[in-house]
Length: 107
Image 1 (cartoon, helix red, strand yellow):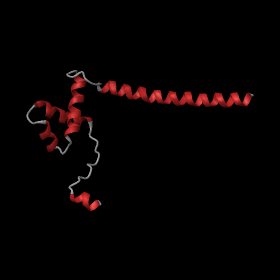
Image 2: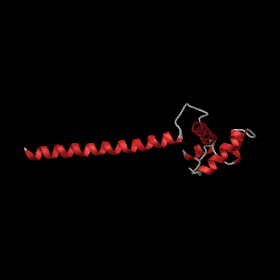
Image 3: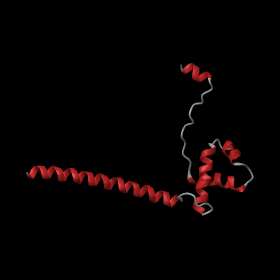
Image 4: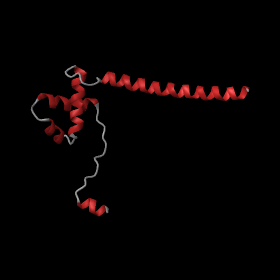
């Protein structure tokens, strides 16, 4: 079966890479300059078009050029609030179990 898939031209997934904020900013600047298309920039630097498009969109959101999403600071705040909410839910769950345990003990 795997031989059939290989002959059909199935691509191996691209390994996940992480890029520095400085590198992302340079790529965004190249795209916004208008000398080359987003596709050309992504091919020149061996990046996916989707990643570059997302970086450009996020930069536009952060500068206020777009308003159809969250800025980086809002994303950070949302992630922090979700972590805190998860921790508080766990605390409440532990307190509920402890209350039930001690209520049963006192009977």
